Length: 120
Image (cartoon, rainbow, N blue to C red; front, side, top):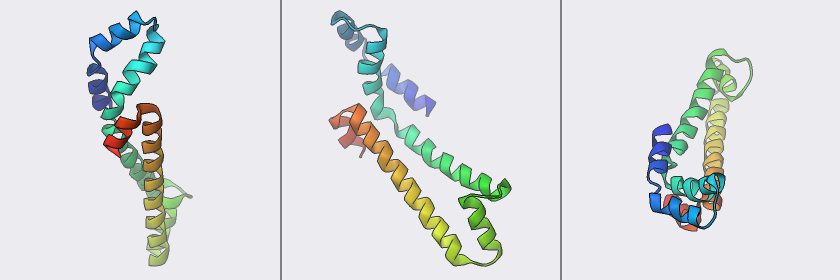
């Protein structure tokens, strides 16, 4: 995620920053109106990291928690309750789809219409 973000920041042209400066933008405005929109195409790493973080949380719940979705699935597996395990898997899938949809919505809102269509 950090590598993709760094690549996005490095892809910002010096001319774009100079143009913002010539129009009276300060450093903070240049950051939010020039650099951040330019890094939006490089959010693939963030989308991948989001999926990996959810799976890590569920795995941690399976190993050491006494509550949560991972714990529910793990204890249902021990008692051969496949229906409960499958419900947990479906819930995880729906959570992932919802998180990805919200992420794409934020990107299209703050990253511009063209960038949003490009990654959706």
